[in-house]
Amino acid sequence: MSMRPVGVTRRVRERARAIRAGRALGLVNALSPLVRLYGGTDKLSHGYTEHYERHVGPRRLERLVVFEIGVGGYSSLTPGGSLAVWRDYFLRSRIVGLDIEDKTVRLGGRVAFERVDQSNPEQLAEVVTTHGVPDIVIDDGSHVGSHIRASFDYLWPLMHSRGIYVIEDLSTSYYPTYEGADPPPASSAMGLLTGLMDSVQALDTTFERYPQWGRRSAPQYPDVWSLHVHPGIAFVVKA
Image (cartoon, rainbow, N blue to C red; front, side, top):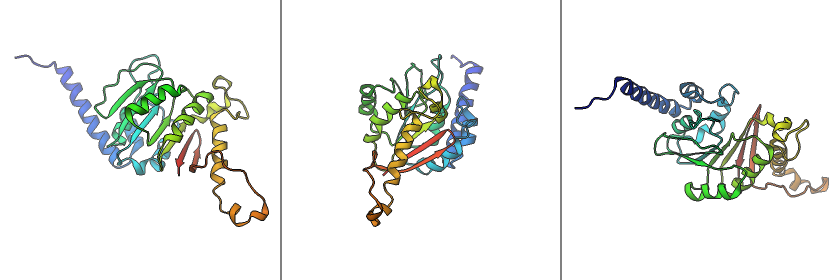
């Protein structure tokens, strides 16, 4: 009778304990401890977790399709820790990691990985065909302005009401390396947010109640309900 090596057994038990602990933390909307549990992601050091708890936490127990663009690991086949975090945070959801670099993802049946270029609409269309329209998109990908716009322009029109689109690391809008500048160009993530903010303000009933004060043009994004911007991160909510 063969016996499993002690080291392997220990690792299996440790992984099982982590998953149980992770699910418990997800259940109570404790994202910061969950990130500490798995590591391998900078969302806590950037201060993003409290904003995720507020804006996407209320939906964490729903059955959703969640896309994360950019899953870390960089030159390694091993992804960062965020996919494990989202698996345990969105307890009933399908998690799909997208990255331009290949990754080996073994996180259970609810977590999938697709190797795609986020700026390629044809490749994004294949992911949607395979996994469904996302309810939540987290863009932590290349951070290049034109790539961010390409992903948003394709995925946002497909998303359903109450969908949430998250864009991380907005500081890159100011860096030439990421097609940014100071002030940020219209092609950057911050440029996109400016257009989204203008579209939200078009919903102000003042324009209808007092037309004699002046008229305003039609919004560029008429299906944006709200926009929440924090240092480094933004949450766009669909009407």
